[in-house]
Amino acid sequence: MSVRNQSSEQSAGTLYRAGFACFVGRPNAGKSTLTNALVGKKVAITSNRPQTTRHTVRGIVHRPDAQLILVDTPGLHKPRTLLGERLNDVVRTTWAEVDVIGFCLPANEKLGPGDRFIAKELAGIKRTPKVAVVTKTDLVDPKALAEQLIAIDQLGKELGIEWAEIVPVSAVGDKQVELLADLLVPMLPEGPALYPEGDLTDEPEQVMVAELIREAALEGVRDELPHSIAVVVEEMLPREDRPADKPLLDIHANIYIERPSQKGIIIGPKGRRLKDVGIKSRKQIEALLGTPVFLDLHVKVAKDWQRDPKQLRKLGF
Ligand SMILES: Nc1nc2c(ncn2[C@@H]2O[C@H](COP(=O)(O)OP(=O)(O)OP(=O)(O)O)[C@@H](O)[C@H]2O)c(=O)[nH]1
Ligand SMILES: [Mg+2]
Image 1 (cartoon, rainbow, N blue to C red):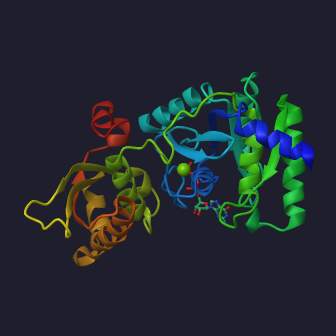
Image 2 (image 1 turned 90 degrees about the vertical axis):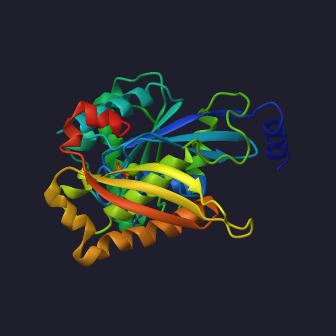
Image 3 (image 1 turned 90 degrees about the horizontal axis):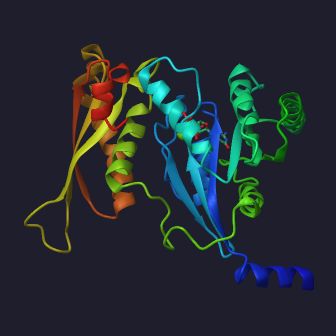
């Protein structure tokens, strides 16, 4: 007891740590959901479609003993488009820059070639500690979880990766999420906080708004369409002539798709789908910004933007 008191006094004083941990893994492994659970607020959008995350998102966890900055990355996958290649580049740059790497592996899916491919690359990064994070444990029984833990341990041995920890978590069931933070913090360097207290992300508001619209637009679309959707917020302006106690924020945003034939699906019969996307995302945006919003959405075609360097640049990639 006295020992513990002593160490917590120390950590409140000299032993403050601050640094970066990134989450990597296959698309759909649960990286963004875990990031949000650790931060305690939605900083990254999530969906059951693979390749939801398209840029690195920083989520900041403030603790008395540390500031843990989580870098959520796009799922690493075999690229089929220029966008895919760009996303993979972003991931590789990120893991070279962080203090600890969290490799996310879903508990409910057997280790596959996609996981192996990432593990092999991680094996080449010698100096950064690697934590295997087994996600979605609420979806499996204890026996299946035990088998997955053994498989991950063996994968490490086979490829020469020494896991600093293997941690099962459930972001949805809120199981062991705190523990994961407790395990990551000692791997951060000593040093002062890197972000102001209270900041939960460094995402610009305009980007977060665009992401919330994209999240709503992803819901219920299938096949190639999720990949074809991009959202850009063109303008965010407080409506003029509003009384101070009744502000309204005008937001104009474009939803881009790749082909004219996709337009109808996004808009839906009699515009119903687009209207739903507007209603859903507006609620989220109002919660995020704490102000009533008028959301003006337009659907536009940016032909084959995933493969076109010029279009990619325009869309911010
Ligand atoms: N049951 C359960 N589902 C989860 C859990 N974590 C994530 N999911 C679901 O898994 C799906 C993918 O989650 P994301 O967090 O978007 O996955 P990701 O790894 O960020 O995916 P990309 O950004 O595409 O690489 C979503 O439908 C989540 O709701 C969990 O702990 N339990
Ligand atoms: Mg993600």
